[in-house]
Each structure stands twice: as structure tokens, then as C-alpha cells.
Length: 177
Image: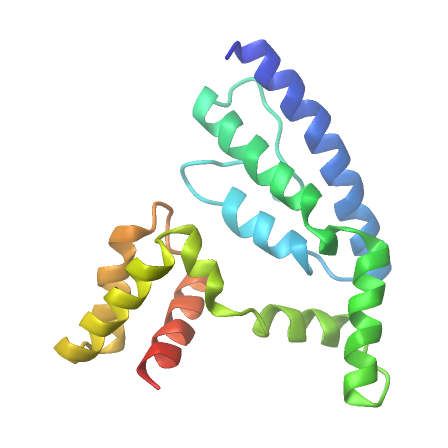
């Protein structure tokens, strides 16, 4: 694809995404909350460099074609995520408030959302049956948490940051139950 077309698409998408990010920040008073956290984690990687220090989607003519494609893909996923919208964040917070039977702040709702992720996210990196076969191997071999994380990194084609490492540790505990 032509780099100018990629750049123009990235510019258009980043403007929409950055507006949503700003609206979420104004609503919640939190940087990188709800769906923004996942976008930030992905775009902050050393290979992509698609996230600014101010917490926005980066647009630059100096970006490589690969960086632009990756940033466009992640930005589209963010824009399609219901929790990138103020109304959906309000609904999710109300849902948590009802379950808790007391008022929940946006910060508390964000924490509940971030920690309440299910484990199907791993299927982005490996098929469901492949994952469960991998889990069986983990049990048979009696791997510890560090070995598990080291082995599964071979299936993950992105840098393992602190948040992903925590998710992998939680996944290890889940599969070893």
C-alpha cells in the first residue's frame, strides 16, 4: 500500500481515537483507562512506537510502513471496542455499581475491568486447541511460572511488558488450578 495513503488513514484514525481518549480522560479523570489501556500497551512497544508521552496515538511521517500498519490496526480495534466510548464506560460503571450494591467510582470500575479480563485473550496468539494442548504439556512437565512464561513467549509476537507479564502469571495460575 502507498505510504501516503497509509499516513492519511493513520492521521484520520488517530484523530478519532485521540478525541475518544480525551473524552474518556475527562469523564474518568484517569489516563489510560478501560480500552485505552490495551491500546497504550500495544502501541508503546519498542517496535511500534505508536504512542506519545502525553498518552495519544502517534502520527509521524518518520514511521515505517510496518509501524503505520500496526498502529492503524490497533487503532481500529480500539475504535471498535465498546469501552472506548463514554456511554459504554458509564454503562459498565453502572453495572459494577449494581453488582456491588453501592456506588463505584470510575477509578474503581476501571480497576475491576482491568482485573476482570477473561483468559480468552491468549487465543489472539495461539488457537484454542493449541493453547489447551500447551496447558497439558505444562502440567505434564511440571513447569514453574517462569518456565511457563518463557515457553509461551515463543507464541507471542510482541514485547512482553509488565502488564502482559502479569496477565501471563495470572494465566499460569488459572491453568495450574
